[in-house]
Image (cartoon, rainbow, N blue to C red; front, side):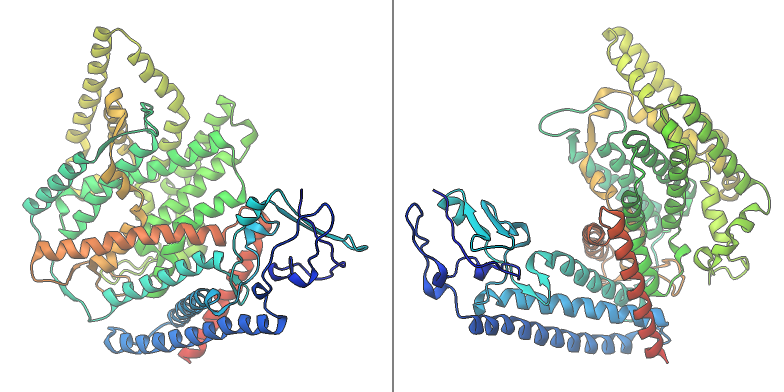
Length: 603
């Protein structure tokens, strides 16, 4: 028999403590009595008092956190290498402090709520609780009816959620992420803008560099895994684990290149960056071509992923955006792929139209980069964002020089990425056709493919790759697609290679953006504002022990920033256009407010 109760029509929302007050329960024929302990529902005045105590505790804890944060800032200022802070730096410092204080206060309030007797309100997931339905409609004595399927389902109802100043305990994840992010940003400043940690010269040693690369590769081979889930082996080319692995080992060699100042592999590093840009074209085109998802939420989430962290680092460290040019390049070329796919997207299934759009994108790129004067005319209005003033190269008086140089080196390879994504079904069919051949013929076909790829790769190395740095830069934009194509063929030449990946590098590949940015400030030390990482972070006298300890912190924090970015993205960028607009307005107002606070503090 269902549980029921009857009350007068209510004009206020039903809360947990009002669902079944003992004073209103009654047993009637055909209905089960509702067992309740009169002590379980305190009087309304006592309940209000209980609700007030956690809020007071929250205010006290937040005030204490702000006081501690203030003393921390004073201490950091006393050891800072810079004392002339910008208004933006001061404003974001206030924002960090408020985030930490808000988290700590709400955390304390939520923790104390049930211990002080305040039950809270029904959990957000149980506004109509599992197995329970609350109907509040005006009219008559039968206006509100509470039903449940059986007593066991009633017992499974979630306990009420503590709510502190409108923040539910279930919403603490975002506050925790914001507070943790604030602490990490403080650590970033502490490492690279204060005298707390010593800095030392880099050790230039090809033997140490290649020895470390070999050791990491050995460890990577020990983490070899089969692609796929739940025992299903995947032999498709370019599956996600493989591309993340590709990004991972390139990123490790990229940061080792900086750590050991191994300038001899400069040309290889240029190819690695080209491969990253190729993935921008390949990955985004594949998504838009297959999913046909051109919605604002998806695009804004991508922009958040690429620019959230770098934006705060720029403000905190008073650096210009172009110092971290990888973020700017990926953002720009992501826009390029989006517009190429979005314009006339209803015809993307038409091969002729799709190829025509890719050709048009190529033409626009040629016009932008290879016709003198066009690039600067187009990007001059963005000089405030994309301009760069390099303290190590004051001879470059053109603020857009860095942006033109960096993006120009890879201005074609993203288009090659789109072509590869468009041709992927054909490529997959050819590989499958080889696998379906008789064993002898299959071996010959694979040998021919591998031999041809090696021959092309050897020709490229001899003709272009071994050129001096400046000469190589001239041909790189037009030839970088060749070694990328060779790698794709060799990495996917056999089913065994396609079905396996090294998990260590796949893990590293997920945090390439974070490791790229943080290497400047917590793994090495830069030369200052807009400075490159020319020094090593020194904690311990032993080189290898110091590198091991600093690297452990570096990779852990990189991973944490990656996770925090995702958590805050889900809060800041909802999946509906109206929510995005509202949140954008809120963030714009908050940014202006904190900047105004910074201006006031600076004045």
